[in-house]
Length: 423
Image (cartoon, rainbow, N blue to C red):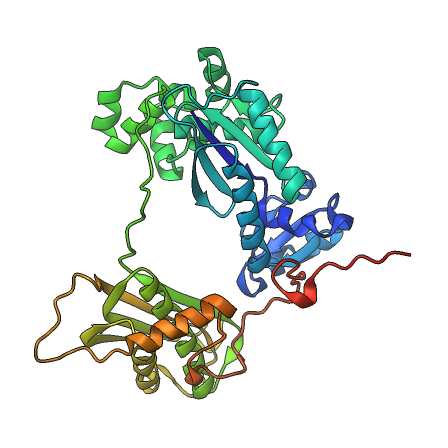
């Protein structure tokens, strides 16, 4: 059996954990630079705020009318609370797979060895209650015999009347009850485009999808749709690798909190991204053979849109931060243009190889400072990110992300630790 534990409106729910005064109020969370809405709590949804990823300036008046609490994305807080939730959930099953920041799969094995004596529904309720008591995050728990059915059960737990946060699909009657009330696009892996094709054939519900013939689904769609049909009928087809494969490309991009007009500030931003991608590169044990660097203005600027990119191929593959940063600095003249208000820039490593399997060039030996890079990574791992960084990045980040509605980082910053006053 599989259990899917999923936080309801993760970002908005995290904002309410340490601020009880807003738990019953409508809360929305904004994306980077406070650009768009990326999370809406259930209270706000009931008050008619359903435009996900709508630009903040377009819905500002509506938010003020309903008295919504607006927050900037507090990634440090969300990541820490997510880890605490995963630690709690992991105690309930022999195996756990963290699927995203707000959800995880629990796997109980193929035998009956880990079947809870209290029953699956009581077990699911125990998970939900434990997470609430320990982390104060509201979660939905769905349990079924396959990952896709567990996803469906979780959907029922949160969105179908009568389940109240917990759903178990362990009988034919329960499977019909849940799937017949789900749209075909509510099924895990069925996107909007695929949903339109299925709707055109008269397949509207998840139950109708489950009743498709396997061969027909594969012939007219794909093997993935066929596997989804199998999963909806109780046959496990999807799983996850215990060890994730290395990424083939690594990017770091970000829009600025304010427009950049100086070449030095743009260089600092590019080196900042170079440091991030280099650290990720070493973490997965890879080397980069070629990279791309770009800088751009905003498409909404009255002066017109400007975007420039530079490609660079290394003579010898590297994961040395100083070498990647040096390329960014050398590319500055090609990217920068006087009078342009730069809104976004980034660095991408697009041709990666495994550092343990790459054959070095006899006549062009690598000149990476491996020991220095290892030392920097160890220091940053021990004392926190950016404890040591490349000087060309600059000390003060004028390009830092705008977060005007940022809540305190209650669990990751000493100055923001909650304080209790006793009278």
